[in-house]
Structures are given as structure tokens and as C-alpha cells.
Length: 275
Image (cartoon, rainbow, N blue to C red; front, side, top):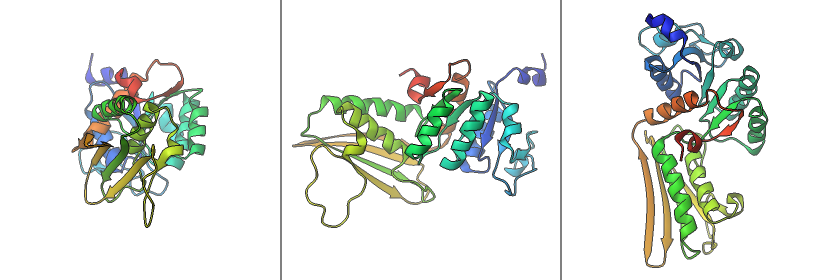
């Protein structure tokens, strides 16, 4: 069996936001993967990459995939779409992916409650794997956060500190919110009722039971997350530091392959990783 013939048997994957940092990393990873093939690269209408081979647009060798602005045509050739874009675009892609019955892997953060309702509707018809962070280490940290929060009493305050590059547009990060949700679940409370997302001025003493968030933005920080459990006379700190965005791309590709053959519904990296 020749290389080209073999590639036709592999799941075809579309990358949205192909010109972005994550988009380019995903394009390279899928192009090199022995388990998947790149069949589409999507950018917004009017983008300078439209009509160009995505490999050449990235400054490399041609990959035989032309960047396009019509997701419908690309989705028709695919088995999965990997999406690290913006909330409005992700919601639109979810509806189209549901129509095409594609696995939709979502790494987009900053989604509103209304956006999440629309994703829930799309998941009735297709597999959606959504996570604020696709890395194995972070998802293990989420589970540890849940267990530590459940084990420690109310004497321990919980603070989540995250740091990212200067270009990140949402705060707290999706990963920080994942960790906050895990801590809240460990304490059997709703995060929305106990979250403190910013402090300024005369705030008064810390509210017992609240979960605090702090966001740092600067330079080229890939991603750093700390969960601090501060109690009388002692502190426990869980920490994850990402030094290479490739961990997110590898996790997203793993999710896209895992979703093949699963029933429609919403899944997380916890499901993908069997945690």
C-alpha cells in the first residue's frame, strides 16, 4: 500500500484559525502524524492566507491543502475539526460540525453561558470534546485540586494564580476556571457563587469559603498555573508550568482521534485520558 493510498484511510482533520500560533502548530503536527491527515485549513474571509497552500503560507514546504474561508466544504472532507479560535466562531463551527457529524475538539476559551448552551445543543448530534487545557499534566492537576479541596476543611483558603503571554485576550484563563470548578466541586459548592475574580481598593477581609483568581499577563509566557491552599500555619501549592504549546496541540489531536466512533455528547480531556 502506497503512502498516498494509506493516508486516505486515516481520519481527515480540519484546523480552524490556521494562521494563529496554535493553528500553525496543529497544522504541522497533523501533517507529520502517522495517525491522521490534514484535509482543511480555515481562516476568516478576507485573510491574506486565503487561496494559498497552508504550508507555504507558514513559510515551509507545500502541504497540498489550500487555506479557505468556507468551512462547509472543508468539513465535508473531514472526520474531525480542531478549533482554537474565538467564542463567536466556535459556536458557528459547532453548528456546522454537528450537521456534518464531525468530532469537534474545542480549545477556545472565554465562552459565555449562552455560548455553552449552543454547544450543548450541537452535542446532541455530534461528539464535542471541550477543555480549557488539553495537556495531560493540567488535567491531572485538575483531579488533584478536586481531591485536595475535598480533603481539606474550611480553614484553608483557595487562591488560583495564572500567568500567560501578553496577547491573551481573556481572563481568568480557561485552565484557571477548570481548576476553580474542580476546587468548587471538591467542596460541593457552585463556583459562580464563591468566585472572587478581582480585588481592588478597600475590599475588607477575605470572605470565608471564596475561591480567588489572579491573572498575570506579560511577555511570551506559555502558561503557568498555581492552586494555593492556605491554612493556619501551612500552605499547599499545586503547580503546572507549560514551556511548549505543543503539549496543547498533541492533546487536541489525541482528542480528535479518540472521538472517532463515540456517541454524540459533550466530553472532556478527563474522558479522553481515562482519568
